[in-house]
Length: 188
Image 1: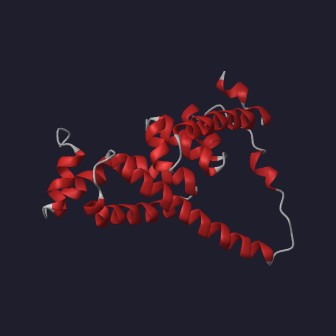
Image 2: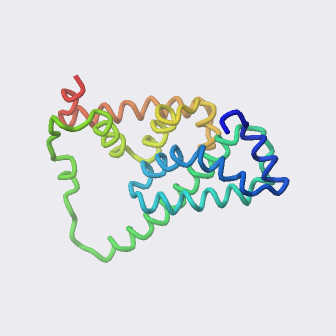
Image 3: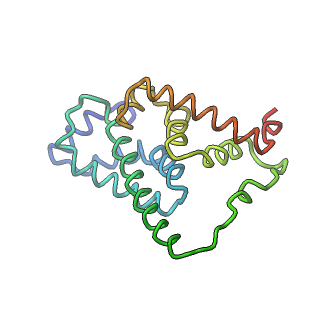
């Protein structure tokens, strides 16, 4: 059903053909799952949040006016849902940490050597995963989901200029991680 537009599918679903919503799910599940996995850094949580996102989008289809593309509207739901989940996780972690007096050295997370067998794309994904959530999201949406700066701005609720600044900072942070850990040679 590649010839059918998102808008046509949405109109069909609004008319009562609810099974057509599966077409939208098939179109966007992989990219949305990828974004959620990068943000949440947990596949099971990403699956759970993705299901919630598709349910929210389905329930909100009547409110979708078509001012933007469905993908942009849906990715905004995904992004905001991930931020909400991260906020809950952060509060939970802070509560757990307040009861624990020991401090752990998190630097050891970066103290491993890459083997020659690692695939370059896997290596880059690992480096992106080490970025702060907003930076990883911007990199993921721009390079992996091929969203424009305007679309990313819509998803994140920010201006195009802020997206460009975040994209620049994300690249710089990624470069710093690679240099700090002597990984730059792996890419040459």
